[in-house]
Length: 146
Image (cartoon, rainbow, N blue to C red; front, side, top):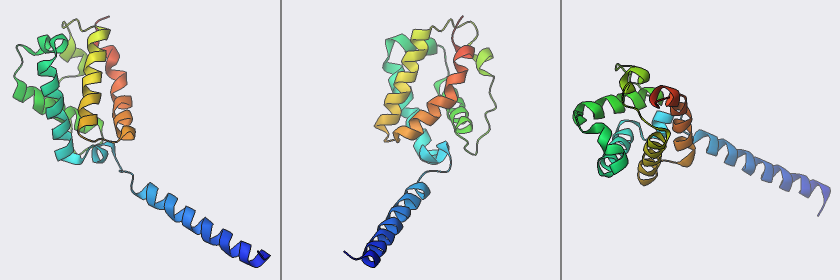
């Protein structure tokens, strides 16, 4: 192969790689909210999570006296806000909301696992799941009884 031909092949390969990288970057959602599928995707994740919580003996006890429709609205609003969506969470802060519930680390971990399962089942990409969990993780100290 001549030197000129090698340069042309290398230029073509480089251009293809660059285009591939640029298209991969442009396909990434601008926000976690978009990665969750915006309003319909977030609603599906929340509904899936609520179904899992209702069937989970470890978690359901915390919601026996809860207005689930109101809780769903607040949870959706909260996750939307955390995920940089167009919502602004107007509920109580996490510390006030969970005060007196004596939530253990095991309970917290179980709820996180249920959220992960819900996101997986709804087809949320792993990078988006991890990004949302990273944003929720600092709330641990306000939720778990210490």
